[in-house]
Amino acid sequence: MSRILQKLMAMYEAMRKHFGHRAWWPSQDGADTPEGKLEICLGAILTQNTSWRNVEAALDNLRAAGRLSLTDIDAMPPEQLAELIRPAGYFNVKARRLKDFAAAVRAAAGDDVAGFLDRPAETLREELLAIRGVGLETADSMILYAAGKPSFVVDAYTFRILVRHGLIGFDDDYASVKALFESSLPDDVALWNDFHAQLVETGKRFCKKRRPQCDGCPLEPFEHDPEAGMEYL
Ligand code: SF4
Image 1 (cartoon, helix red, strand yellow):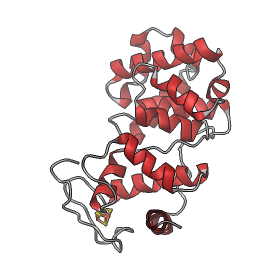
Image 2 (tube, helix red, strand yellow; image 1 turned 45 degrees about the vertical axis):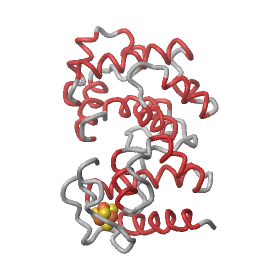
Image 3 (cartoon, protein in one colour; image 1 turned 135 degrees about the vertical axis):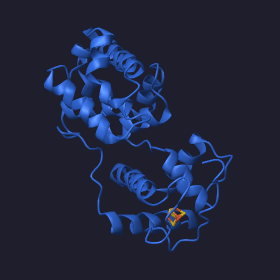
């Protein structure tokens, strides 16, 4: 086992011991159903720059209005969709993004979101990144959590924790951090799924941007510098 794999797995085990299995991605219908897959994809777009609680409120509005479907989102006037997803913030921009996503999926696979997702991860990633408003983290979240295919998700928490633990430098970018995980970890979707979820929880609860709380953090036993990257991260 390589040194980096040993370290990553030890960090993962420490987080998992502390938080338990995270069972991500949160979706009411479950990632095995078409409804759950759609919910995860829409949630991945809605979660940009807001908390998950706000995303749930927006999804609940869509569900209560009977409009939680690709057809409805594609057909709905943008102002009406924006009103329904208002709790998620940036609702006019996000309404356009949801509509772009729904239109792209329908053009490729009709209303069959599960069919759209059922293709090799690299092909799916290219198609998702071609949709306006779908960035790297959003695309990888859809591939890993909705499609159940291997594509490690990197976010701001991942950067912050890895920089503070000396595993990456400030000049590393999304692609290099993703490659570090994917080339080091075993090819195991369930592990990648929970690893990202554990990093998010550690980042949210302990590794805060300005005031990291190392005391009690599951990663405290590992060599770290909580001051690292204060001015960048
Ligand atoms: S809070 Fe401290 S121990 Fe925890 S991940 Fe951040 S730097 Fe590491």
